[in-house]
Length: 136
Image (cartoon, rainbow, N blue to C red; front, top):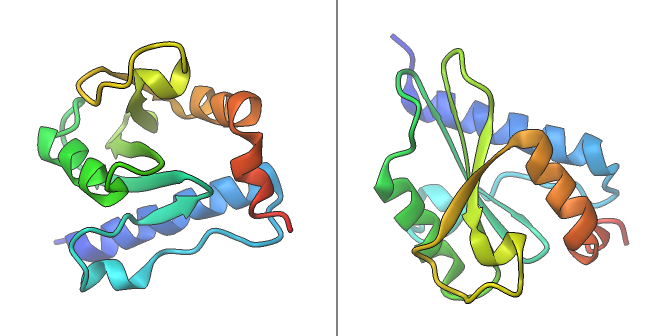
């Protein structure tokens, strides 16, 4: 039987590695180890992005409390992103609609789910300053 804590930590490391490689970060993303002791910390932080990573066996839609967890970690600052993956499914990312189109009203109840490559595209095109924070 797989230890869910180890599975989650491995997924966090996988996401950090994907982001580090995609953006060739000189200040690499690393897991926030205090998250195991502090309830309201995200798994990873990329600039103003607070990333919560969830890897789960069966399903295709994230559990609502996962989104609530990433919202709690942002404390109203920055941008929440729930990165999730189910077995035999692609990696997806839930973000606020406002982060996709800043002209939309800020409302955490309005979200959209992106494929991983679309999330990377979003970061490259609208949030380059957050990437640059890790290249200094």
